[in-house]
Image 1 (tube, rainbow, N blue to C red):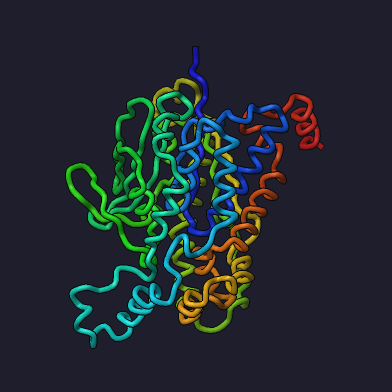
Image 2 (spheres, rainbow, N blue to C red):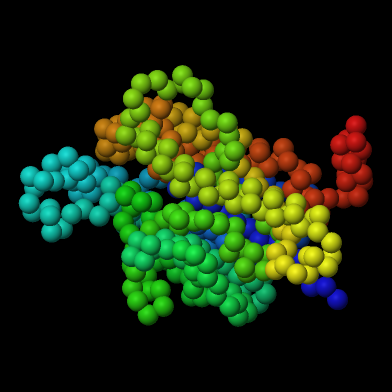
Length: 404
């Protein structure tokens, strides 16, 4: 008798862009409810995330015993979000971190007193600790795993100390750790420090010390050196994976003459951010498609000789460029942050890509939530088919439409 298929949810990184993921989850909850899916039943056996997606993944997993409530809780947090809940936005906080950091870049060779204790990051994300405690219910996560509401949770981080990508995972049953080139996994009870590390955008937020085996290493954003973002879900036993991105994967790019002149510092930083958060996922999705295609043409005997297996995948990503949306909301940032970002061009339209990762303001996050809902509802049949919840009459109608 074959074992039931396991479904995984993978949430990518992207800072404030991760609000889009919550809109997608809300729409999925609504679609499944329409076809009679029990409101409390969690459709995901495995939940994985990186960077801001790791925060969403863990908050979701903590309430895996009640799917509808888990999504509703995330919605409430992201709809009411303010920058001050994520990083210090007051004048003193900005001067102590951002202004001091920029001054060090410009005049550090003159400021001897900073040679021994340089600022660690552009922004101080100490307030994020309080937000995480509000979002999480870690004892409930342990109970969800113990009672079979969830098989595993995995979050990723990048070790600055060892120069490798690490997946920390917590599972209901024992899963042997895996290791690849520049990648390894560590079974550990997930906590607030893991999420602070996973979401520590390089240079923007400070690195976080974590124990990896018997040594302490400093970790940063999980999207760094993430060569195979979807692999943790597969190693943990997933047969199908729903990927919710935070950027338009595979987009053709801007028109050649849209942003003329020499790029601003913010424009270059935004381009680097997109490389960190989007490129690895795009390559991994393409790789999985090629593997599935190769396996489909092998004979059963040939397939038995390989450890590869077909993985069903559905990727939902923004249909609109999020930096364009962000450029409409930079005015909602607190004045000290807006002043700091304007110094490097992040409040200009061509530098809005950087702002799109730091705009933890409800006017922006609500727009992304709405976009996530719209994008998902437009793909209703694909979503329901992925979960095996498409009613026969609808499925037959869909096949007829494709035939036409």
